[in-house]
Length: 313
Image (cartoon, rainbow, N blue to C red; front, top):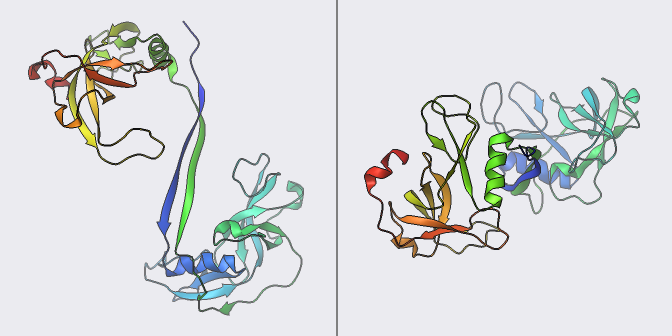
């Protein structure tokens, strides 16, 4: 058996959100080197600020200016910083209770080593040289042995306030498809589609998962299916996806390959989108060097009878 495949993968997308008056003021304040908290009715000062009291759920809007200095309440040393983290050299993740605040703010502490970091140590903000109205306007914290800062009331009003942010969500990981899907992917490289048959119910699953989803039994018997198949159901896509070079509208369908007991996904081409229908017989179209079908097109055969694929909807 060939070696099980693995590859580095990245899932990434930009998340855009609007900001309310409290968090908008907080981020705008960071741009202006001002740290704002919000005061609750019972006198607590929350940093970072929130719009609703986490204890009583009542709306809170009273902003206060807290100090850029504070005390470490707990910490953990980061030996190997990753891409996108605040510092590119080893540092400590710390929870800092800023002077005048009753809650702690999570950020990075630039320190020469873990032996100098301790709960109760005094720190201060190191501001980023270029600030845009984001939490990264605080470049990091650094050790500090000066005086305690005082808290003052703040109106939270600034010129050109920040009203929205775009946060990039990203996950880097190594994916291994396992034995069954490795065989499936390798077969696709030879323009073949291979599934696995359950030893109990005898159903053939494509793509295979190494176990029958109905019986729970391990599968190992390989079965070549297709290449032709039947459209069981479909949808018309009218919104163009970013970085996808396919003109809309187009059709994405469930296709039951001949000999398979599970429909897989595929794009339908070679036919006007409004002529695609359930029961349409299709075949794969491969591009030069492609490792999987680019799309499926009509074979010209009569449509399949509904009874032949109704169990695969």
